[in-house]
Length: 627
Image (spheres, rainbow, N blue to C red):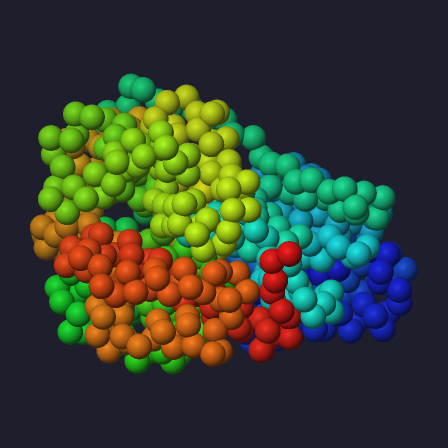
């Protein structure tokens, strides 16, 4: 796990210019790799690669990057879990000679002997930049699930890429940067920009499973494309028993692969099936005591308590349970740090507790396992019941509001096209118009979701693709940024290639067997987890922001959003903003938790946007503006 960056283009006039830009970029991602940094510059080709290292596999100097093999040069962020098999194959078939035990080295040898086709064989989480001197081309690629982010920008004759936007923008020496108006609208609607768009104009996020090839001949006209072909087909005849057995095997093997490390590995654990199953399986496979971390909101009530249930699982597998206490004071102290780590506001308020738990875990660990991906791959959200209406008879009380919202959203779509796209809408276009003006009406933030829907076979396919292509990759970006802010590598066994491919073979009726959400994961968990896990409602690691904003943080909204230092006046009508804040503070919905959660998400977004605008101006000297 590391941070990578680089530049290419005509504006790199000499070695001094390239070095100056590259070192500024490297400095901005030093937190991602405190174990070392490296640079490689070829001024006559106007290309430069930078790297910061978090040493996990082969912690010796042999694992330093950039890595080189004759006329090939690369920087890699992430882990390639099948590198032992790939290395053996390359040694056997081509007599490849390796100089390290680092997984990144297989990228050079694999490309040298098999070209672009080799990338299809990679199983892991990665963002890779490889420069081929012979062909004078820079190759960028990102793992299939989108676990590792890779941003790029082409502007003023300079192409730049980086693991984080703060590093990317360091290459351009700008004091003002335009906000992407559509990206902002998408964030306000769906809590994230979509389809590779960011909140920064001209800055793109490479799509999961895609490759981007840059040469000086086409630097002004670049396009990405998938680097692998999808051949997995649905198996309509598979039984629940067979699917569960296949899952058990794939899951156990995946967890073992994700334990590959030369440094100690820990795990996150919540009251959910996914993270608890990962932690328990990891303890079982490793045969050694495992430390597991849980965030806890003490005094916030039973709905926000994950620690008590998680503790039972850790005691069950004989591990060490670390409970990280989080309160409202932490939000005041760390809010700016959270938004700074994210580069841009993205997804919900869960980033805050994630940040606090990662901060605690990083004191003793470099690698941590997570449960991301289980809900999306194996139908864990109540909305998936819409694909099998027969399961509605098994709906649980805790699912009613969630499912009711999506049914209402389908009806609302008749009048407001941003609704009914299988992703919750936080700020409607009507509300955005009041805040930002009539120009917002020309935007179509739902367009990318609409494109998914138009190419789907049925409702089940549409839901699966929406959550795998539009929702999950953005959650993974948040996880990467939050963990790497503390130099900790988070790994996702649920998103191993074998797990994703297995999921695509299983029909929806099997995933919802017996009217149970995530039925396969839960069936497998019967041999792993205590019975208390099966007697609780689905929560999703909720954060008690609504309680804090109406209690100890009551003045935070006025101070941050309407105070003299607030930067929101640049993008919103402050009089309208004040009305929305007043409405939130006095809304009757504050007595109905699910409805108040939606309102509180709006306030979180406003707090995030204000911090974002202010941090970029004060810390990085860049004023973000909408023109």
